[in-house]
Image (cartoon, rainbow, N blue to C red; front, side, top):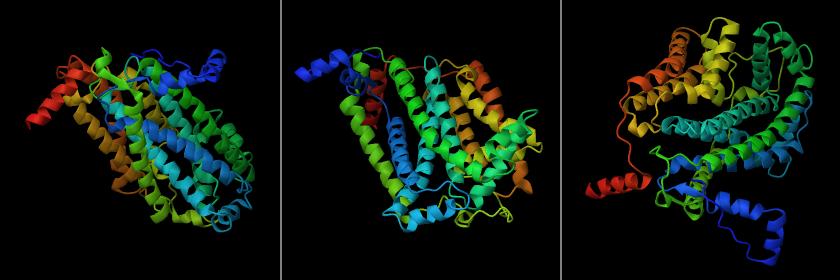
Length: 413
């Protein structure tokens, strides 16, 4: 139920503008009168949190770019200059570096919420695909940004990850040469990564606009997975959802501020405070924490090409979820079997993340292979089968009746 805008221009200027560019009416219909399911919980606030984080990252990134020098002989020193000599440069740098981690924390919660409540199912397939495109762009942006400080982990991380493309038959080495801008990671690589790191957030912002547009076409999903059937099932976006979003975003930014002011280097690597040295390889090369599950999948496969295929295949699985899940019921609240397998998947993802940070030896590799196998089995076998064998709980007739039933149960308790 998308509804129609109830906006009426109140002044002569608004009427003049509305006839030529109805932007105020568009904002009103999208963020004021837009009908929102009345039973949304706080997991639905992460869209607003992600929007706020994107704005934060773009603004701090622009200010950092004014002082950064994308040159392999000067990049490390320019970051130290930002930290020591630029007014509040330490705040900009720590805010931007930790902001990437906060961005990924929020996006992973947002994605797992979508998986739990079936927000990828018809008619929201395109909405999910746009979200996954944003995730891919975020990963590319985060990787390139991690290279820019030009510390030891930045340099060797770039060397290892970009070398993986060389495993692609026929065109692999050409791709690697293009990424490097030569025959090894160096000044051309740094310039390319800086340019792309600056450009990609604006591409993300463009896809976010499409994502929000698609959301307003099909409407929001909700914890019951039942579509709104009348105006009694919805409330206006403002003030109900708006106030909840503002509160949740404020709490999230308090958590973010705690990282910046108290443990700004907790999620980083100490080797990145050592200037890049192509003659000294770190004992253990690891990417940022938000890449670790995929890194663990890559390392669990003994063949280089096989590892690359599985790593990218793990992301392709997420793109294909709307067609792999055969159940007609959206919410895991009414799918008892699926709920168990969902939480197993969460544990597997966390386990892969932890294993990705360990040295690939002994039983770590064996466990990584088991978890990698389960990850693919979950999407390729378990999801399609569950839709055929699972008996869901009865769905409520409407959102309002589900809310009233829950309220009644709480009052009785």
